[in-house]
Length: 340
Image 1 (cartoon, one colour):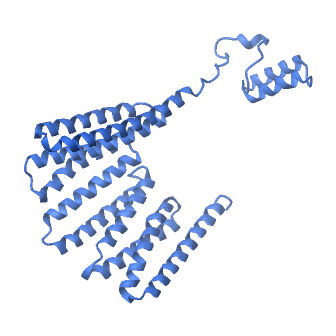
Image 2 (cartoon, helix red, strand yellow):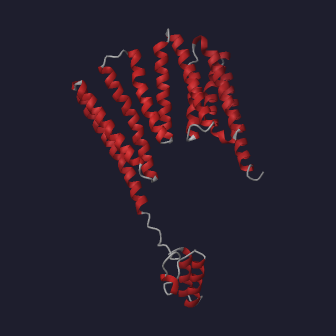
């Protein structure tokens, strides 16, 4: 019984309208598909194309799905805790075959669970599937590490040997499920593979640090471009994660002789991200990595160039004021846009 039918019953009980008038109101609303007809109406038992559909089932399936999601997370937490404790006690005593079997078994269980959950259409099941498939990526990296360590792969090449299969699995999951967690896992695996490759081929530590920062910044910028062009979905995850990777990679590379140019580059990229966020409404989330990058890089650049604490904090103040002004302007623009 919906709200209108309940009100009609109350009107009849209060004597405001007669039962006949109430039946007429129900019949009228039924003809306009608002409420069910009265029980005494001749057409209440109609069959065929014009028969009234039964009321929707209660929300019990959704409740059970939510409970199942919570139970799934609790179960996963218990499994992780127990496995961590047991392996911490016995890992050193296990043979290589035993280690591979344990990790492979965990990987198989989690991957099957994530695949089965992904086939259920409810939102809780989809969220649970995303978490389980993210764990699948992590377990793939663990399994690859166990195998490469047992094979005697050198430390320099082990990073590539671990991150390469991890990237393949993460990319396959993301190709099948365009979800935020799967996209972030793919970006993390790609960044790990790029870092490992640079570490493998770099000549010395200074060249490796510079090449590593520039490579990761390039990966982040490419990720932002892919999300902006609609190739990576959801776009918000790609824009924020790619932007953060870009500015943080430049900022962490800034030391010794590269400190000044890298900090300038980090500030310039942050300003560019803010400019794009302001001018292109669908890319407004770029204000997050742009603002964070500006807050991190600007004080360091001022301190490096001026070397004065007061000047540094003045720079922080001006940066904060600028970000507040940008945020207020964007909010006002968004509010005024629908009305012209």
